[in-house]
Length: 298
Image (cartoon, rainbow, N blue to C red; front, side, top):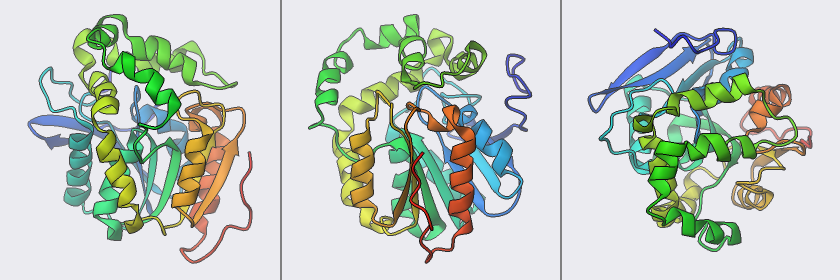
């Protein structure tokens, strides 16, 4: 049963649960047809893809997971919330559900989590859709260097657990011109409202400090998937993952097509869902050997 704070018109999906490591991973599975597998970022959950799924489920089977510690999944106080373990759990979910011929849709931390699985099992993935994300070390990025002092601070867990720093400060500041209203932002943040519900978000912050070599290793292994048809949808006003990251994806994934959404921030599918969905639908209708007729510019 979904919590009563969820607006059923915004998130009108049936909840399903996948048992893993003694806990329940929440996911939604809507529609039928070719599989679109949605993998979220932070501080977020499957809610971020609701507008994609509501529209695309008429033609596709749309599956979206909530990592353990996120969304409507269990949030144990003691758990391996590492980025790598989330990726292993996603891999287990895919293998046990025997999902094949998928299009992987990723955003933010969903990039390394989901693309790691695709690199390990390229035969199961047909196409890739990437919203503002990354797949490499950020050690040389000036913005990351400025951020490292905060990531190293022993006060970081306190900021997250007691002041809800990520949902109160980082999330509202991540949008571009089309900022969602209070009710929508509440849906993003409500799963993380208690100090015992912040284990997953704190671990992701720590991952930025500790996993840069793993991210770089993934980039060095990208040849397993770099030739797959890829759609890059990018909010160009993202203050977190800036446009130079889009250009790196474009150089590393030569069979890619781009939709630039000039007024959108970190969540382009939240701010411009109709444009994002139109681009995904057009992209899905092409065959693996076709080139899109237009180079998207939003």
